[in-house]
Image (cartoon, rainbow, N blue to C red; front, side, top):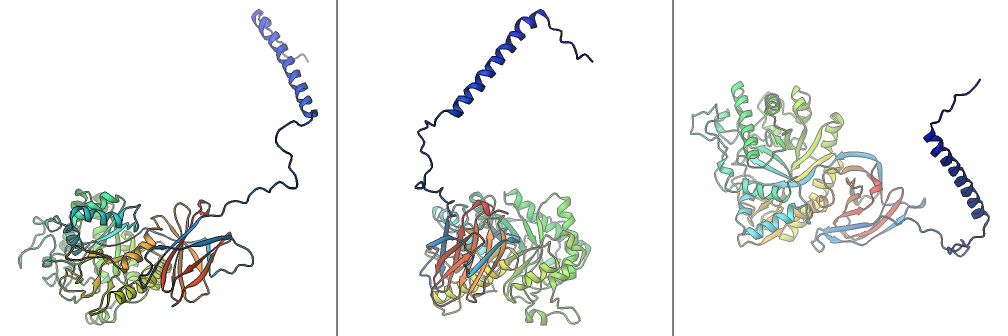
Length: 532
């Protein structure tokens, strides 16, 4: 069979055929040259490898850093020396980290901007306030708080009489919310929040009401009673909370999360606003509020509950005769149809312990868990040294490490700032302390809460996730994370009365550090390869 005929034009015969011939000559020259290079003696200036030449250097170990704060205040966010060595089969670290077992995502750390806090901050000279807020909230600062909780209306920490945003004379109603006004928040609260948002636009805000307006309650009072069990009451209260969210949004302040009632099982408060909201009523209200938020295009999420890890016996005893005291309030709430609108559950620290968080998560593994309130305390006639030590020790272990080991996505203390008397406040807590104290002479004191939060918030940005840490050493409490950048972070409390050297290891490295007595330390191992 004849192959295809190659018909070339005159132009193609003139140029292509000579070009092919030239190409073939070039190929022959290259082949000959390569053969000559192959057979020629080496003349490179590079020396031959020899027995005395050094081996290639081992990869550089990751950089580790550590800081610590002690209960006796002798060390405050002080750097600790650490050593990093390759792990060996003979190592038996005091704390072992397993990055393959992941836990919750971290959302943030912070405190509450109560009206008391806002007023104290507002009273500071502008430059001093700006420096303090930058210190607390800047993403490059020493503390790096990223979350604030704010009251919707008055809490117990106000300098005025209790209020809501639609207060009326006795017997009056305002079902259309024609008298709704955010004016009580315009003098200090909103301006202070605007300053924080200007420093850190990513700060997250959680809003919580202590009470609906009195005319929406069975008691006709801000103090005690329940939300009226009427359709128009549910609809009006939902509209009231949405007005608050929208009004704050107009001021450039986005409300990320909302709890529908602070401490819903506290029926008899001590002189400040509160509301009894049983499980069935919170569920009923959320079923109204959730769709309204959605239809309005508001992206504010809902946190249920917002009360203690376990039911306080005094609150259980105050339950109306014949009613369930609701020992499992969060779980009961999540078993109702309202769960479709609930993004997470909020806890306080004033009764029980953080293991309640894990028990809830085991039943509802998709729910986000927050610790939204936990105040420090300064008892009457107690020295500043003892108040710091007691609050620092308790919050380091219970508020911080235990709540994080038990699936908390966010951890908040209570007041961001109070004065030297623990105020201003009307009723409620007589011994509460703030993250900072702003004295009447302008002096700013950084309290135990400041350092507890800083030891975590400075090193754990939003998006970090928990990993397993384990130890057989009883004096060490600990929790481990991996940051979005891949760094590994361990928070560890040395409960011992003396300094001790500990080793922290994973499959690759062992870190050694000496922890002071009664100290909260943060050990950070850089290394982007740690990301799973």
